Amino acid sequence: MNQKEEIVQLLNRYFPEFEEPLRQEIMLHAHVRKIRAGQFLMKTGKAIDSIPLILEGIVKVSREDDAGNELFIYHLESGDACAISLVCSSRQNKQSEISAEVVEDVTILEVNIFNMDSWMMKYPTWYRFVLGTYQRRFEELLNTLDSIAFQKMDERLVKYLKTKAETLNSLNLPLTHQQIAQELNSSREVISRLLKKLEQRGQIQLNRNEIRIIDLF
Amino acid sequence: MNQKEEIVQLLNRYFPEFEEPLRQEIMLHAHVRKIRAGQFLMKTGKAIDSIPLILEGIVKVSREDDAGNELFIYHLESGDACAISLVCSSRQNKQSEISAEVVEDVTILEVNIFNMDSWMMKYPTWYRFVLGTYQRRFEELLNTLDSIAFQKMDERLVKYLKTKAETLNSLNLPLTHQQIAQELNSSREVISRLLKKLEQRGQIQLNRNEIRIIDLF
DNA sequence: GGCTTTGTGTGACCATTATCACGAACGAGC
DNA sequence: GCTCGTTCGTGATAATGGTCACACAAAGCC
Image (cartoon, rainbow over all chains, first blue to last red; front, side, top):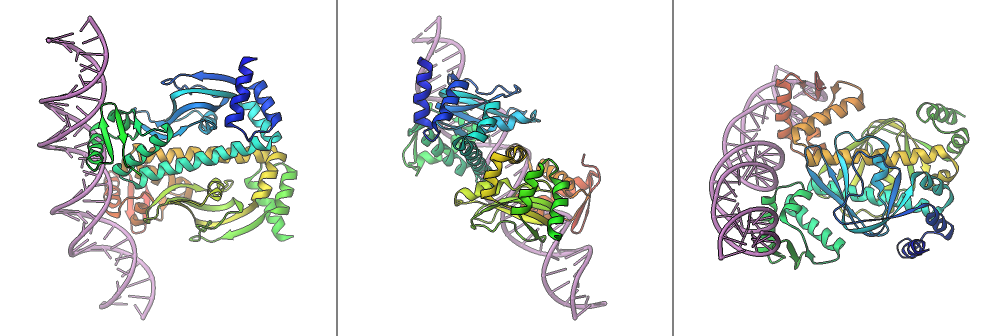
């Protein structure tokens, strides 16, 4: 079958550590879903009964508060799972929400929560994958915390640009100042001025809707 | 045996959800350790080969950067496990460290990492406990992130005082302004001024080395 | 081409927080 | 009692970042 074939190939490529019986189960029980850039992986307020594994594409995970403020946390890419969906599924969120926006068209595998639990007991590679996911996300979250707590906006901006460049795998970032300001929970003018400084130092080059990284490393 | 008896009692009280065979294993393989207030649970840079379960006492978990800045994240209490030690064990930390300082004398159970993994497969209550720990800590971390990202210092201070009051289970907080400033990564003067405002509004009462909460809720 | 929308540059000003300086109040120990 | 170290109060000043106002440029649309 066409779709099964595709899953096999993608599993091979992005989850090579999974043992054969686990792959069989995944093929049997997981659903493939494709989501276009701009859409959201998780609808806020909706109960979460499945965990998405990212096969292809990029997802931007942010925190949003009730006043419309946003804060970029990290990206999800091929081979990642959305750990946060597990966390959020447990309770109704009080004030803040997690948003998971697709920035490059994604193909995901949806694994039912019920399966997820039973596989933990049966498949060591799945066990290691899930715990590893928690650990990596925890670290990234701590990293984000560090940035906000200890760094000034100029440092945060540079770090942000580096992260974007790495994830998008390109030195040309298709971003507006407004977008950046939003993801760093700052204001457009502040970001514009800081970017200007970076340009004057020859570290980046500014064009409309684009930032070209020259020497940030 | 004396110590075994004590473990049984404490397990009953603080981990009532554990099934009997699991308790037996814990008694066989875990070590009890008592640590006095002021000491640190984790020595920075030391490899972590066991996970601490808190039986009694309170531990303060903070993030510290290389410049000596600190940021309070959350408390660990009876029935909690130190999820972060798992995270930190995996890699050598780059720039920031987690510190876990004992604020009220603790009794902990040290569970070897090897045991931890094998129990996950055998005991559903242990499995749920570990995953639940990750989830709760994740939520708390997100909560902390929110505070720094979206709140101003006065709001953060109020939230901090509430948290301390709840954890210490007392309306008398034995804190100096300097301590608070450090845990919120601010400066003593700022905290003093904000506290003064709260006092003028009748919400707290200030004494040397003590803050008495009157009406913060 | 002209009009509109969107993105960017920039000066002025304000709010919050950090830093410096210094003195007063308190408590422990003698 | 006195002394000394710690804690707290407070004014002055600076730095960072947020807000407002407005000009202008680039891209899209009719």
